[in-house]
Amino acid sequence: MIKNKSAVSMPFNWIFALIVGAAILALAIYGATKFISTSEESLYTESAAKLISLLDPFETGLASGKSAQINFKSPTRTFYECDEFSNQPFGRQTIAFSEQTLGDIWGDKGGAVTIKNKYVFAENIVEGENMYVFSKPYFMSFKVADLIMISSGEYCFYQAPQEIQEEIENLNIANIVFTKDLGNCTGKTRVCWSNNDCEIKVTANRVVKDNKEMYYSGDLVYAAIFSSSENYECNLKRLKSKFNELSLVYSDKMKVIQRYGCGTSIGIDLDLIRTQKISSSKEFVSLETNIERLDASNSAAKGCKLW
Image (cartoon, rainbow, N blue to C red; front, side, top):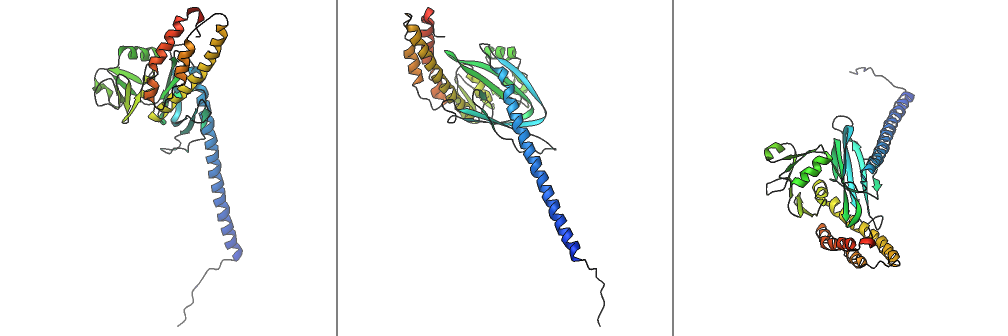
């Protein structure tokens, strides 16, 4: 027995129209996605450039330091990289930016913006709605640069020396608290000047963090606490390069004042430090003795001081 079956026939032009329509819709969605992605990247690149401009006021001159808090409307991520080999002889850093958009979704980070004349000490990625920034001038007898420290989380300083506490409190840095009881540090990154088991441990000349040692002297202790070891080691090499170039300027100045009867041995001390090669923070800190001698030579020059 043959049974009849009903069927619906569809003209070819309808089928063609559906296929073309689906293709156009897919292209439109792809184009919109690419446009949004490109616009987002451009926005984030622009945000990174604006962030760099916000760091300009942290150039201290001869001030003891500056601090500020930068607030964002939504959680952000800033990415910091340091390159000692580019932009010779000074090296460079880059900052890239992204933010949280829908729920817990993070946008792709924007293009990296170059920093050539600043020394930013931060983790490789700093995340949060608030960014805390402070700066300290850095001297190698004469001023070389400003150290700019950036962080976002809360820090608990345990048994910190009195001078450290006074400096931080004078700068009014909101994300750092001091305590003599580690029980008060819940939810905060613990920084200990003791043998306690803390995330960051500070000794006489070393900061131990993420199982890595960073050597410091003076105000470099702040840079080591708030920086990744990669950014820290790289920036110290950049600081040494900056010293080398400035020492050449002072050497030329010394030749000028010698014409007016100013005899000085500062040039020997300058040359000694300039020619010393460093490959690590440990070697950088070892320059301290020679820097002290350079400072003494300049002070003894009295009317013939170079700085």
